[in-house]
Amino acid sequence: MEHIRCLIIGSGPAGYTAAIYASRANLQPIVYEGPQAGGQLTTTTEVENFPGYPDGVEPFQMMDDMRRQAERFGAEIRSGIVTKVDFGTTPKRVWIEDTQELLADAVIVATGASARYLGLPSENEYKGRGVSACATCDGFFYKRKTVAVVGGGDTACEEASYLAGLCQKVYLIVRKPYLRASEIMQKRVMETPNIEVLFEHNTLRLTGEGKVQGADLVYRKGEAGEREVHINIDGFFLAIGHHPNSDLFKDWLQRDEQGYILTQPGTPLTNVPGVFAAGDVADPHYRQAVTAAASGCKAAIEAEKWLKTL
Ligand code: NDP
Image 1 (cartoon, helix red, strand yellow):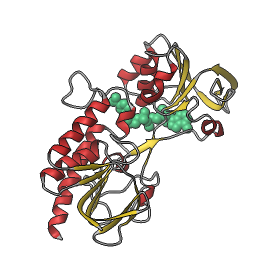
Image 2: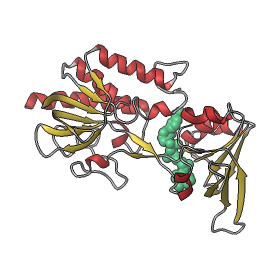
Image 3: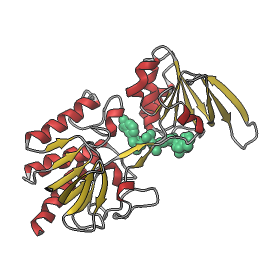
């Protein structure tokens, strides 16, 4: 059975940064990429706030840069999904695709977070047929069409702005009477002529024959003036936040009520010695590429310390 010194689960900014530091420290890290190589960032359009890229950078480019940087120092990046873990022993036991078992002296969990859905039955019905949680991935299919984006945060505003460049019209469906996004993103949305912001609207259901053709919304649900509104749309994009990808570890690692892995404040140390958590899976507050990268660095440094104790 393969015995790894340092296993890194996940390939976003946290995972790759951990791999850069771990490989430079000669920990011979193996990275399992998980279901989305490059992580969540690859589902956005442009990264404008990562230091070192004054003109912004295309997310795939940035993640490819990080990956190549890790490989340059000897990190091995493998495609594959970790499906089961046993952190009750040292070395830790880990299964890839339920079949292949590995042993790892140190494990860095950098599995990130995934897009949330509203939970409407019609969302499932139309998934891949007009429902998407990634404008960059799927926006192209809606050229010159009409789409809706749900959410009022930075992601929703970014996705709406991106789609406005491709589509004839974009509705932004916001449940509150205001946007939560940063000032700059709010301004961008409000100044884009083909974005219409529908404040205080919630989605009831999607409609259409075999694909999304419309949505029934409710304005001011449960309040005076409540009324149903129908919009004709070809695509429906979710941008209502994310949930941490931590279910795999629930029997071993302490998590908060939302599922974020609990770490000792300011460190990547989990309740299991030799298991470290980095990036969005353990960060309910900042969730930025740069903070994820920084925590990946900390995790690799802690893994190095741990390995010296074995
Ligand atoms: P947020 O949690 O910031 O926003 C989620 C949005 O979805 C909120 O407006 C929320 O409404 C809404 N929402 C949640 N659940 C529902 C629901 N069931 N029905 C309708 N609306 C719902 O998530 P984001 O993904 O936008 O951002 C996450 C983090 O990443 C933030 O810190 C953000 O600043 C950052 N980010 C930064 C970017 C950049 O700098 N370029 C780009 C993208 C993200 P409500 O306000 O009512 O709670």
